[in-house]
Length: 364
Image 1 (spheres, rainbow, N blue to C red):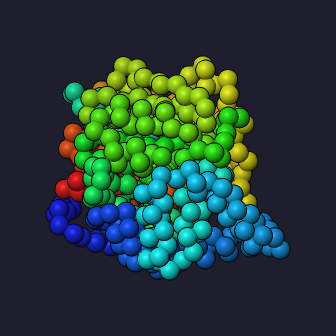
Image 2: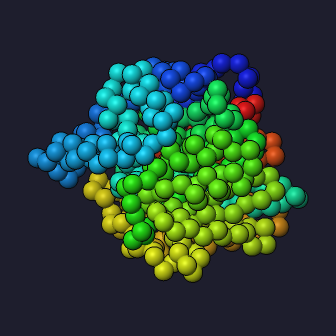
């Protein structure tokens, strides 16, 4: 167990970094960029190398430029304070702002995350588990997992499990015990004229006093892509099934709710698009990128959650089970909102959920 004081700290271990960011967007961005400068440069070089060698040896840099162009079209929709923070990250790391921008909108352009989560009520309290699967750069991402602990001047303190250079939030919890996890879904209802997904969720979590605040912030905002978002507190959990213009709320059944990458409400099923094809360079089997694989992971989690005895150890066991754990599992975490505690898996190899889970408390 690691107990972290509320003072400034910067904890770095192989496969896990914990970095506290304090102050204004400009201050937090500079702290982020300067502290993780080497890692951000590594990510940038690996990304360019991937495009140049994996599939487009001749046109890789042209594709990189095109992605930058598409990213710039989304810049105007980013909340001003987050844009200032991203500019400061770029300044602190001494990289072009366009690259930090691209990192933070890449999911909106490509939709590459495959993830699994659950929330279950036991003895009057909710426990949540989450695996984040990413099918390229997995070997790099397992080395660079970072828990950012934000103490902003505006809004509430919160934590985000992410990577260097990423300002958004796909996996997080705030000081009010509110949990958010994001899962890409595929829909015909897409639009680049919206707030990029991770940045929208970051903004919602940072400013939420209660779970309904996050719900309202997300459902009322202009959105970009399909997503299933788990929202949980100590006594309530539900899923927002989202597209650019449509959304439905899915409630837990019998104190259990599970989430992967397919829609489960009838209204959203009608706009479900085919899942993405296997990207170049991925070592995962073709069926990983299928609708059926999403269903299989969901069913596996549901069976685990039906156990009579279920708490942290059982949550970790669920996250370690195949196919919930797979060769793309780059992050794995358990949340206990009542204690504002998290257990984060640390491993240099995927699935990281097979590694050691480290309890972090006193973060918020």
